[in-house]
Length: 92
Image (cartoon, rainbow, N blue to C red; front, top):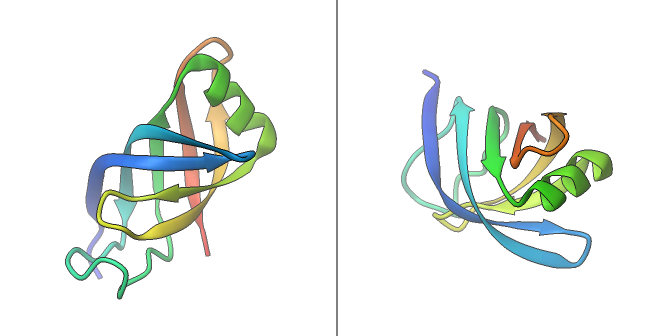
């Protein structure tokens, strides 16, 4: 399957909080029927507040609900202290 890009406004579920965040994911993603097709791999980024970005990076793992309704697990892999962007891998 060819790599594609999916972006939008999603919800980050982290430590009991839900935050609206823009995101972008690249990988072998399937567009179309939302919850019927899980995202099984990919790499991406999201933008939160600098504090929430730091919390996500330190927590390591969180859930991200995509704009199309799919719910994925993410693993934070890179973040610069004081910045709002976090890079992540999609976990299976």
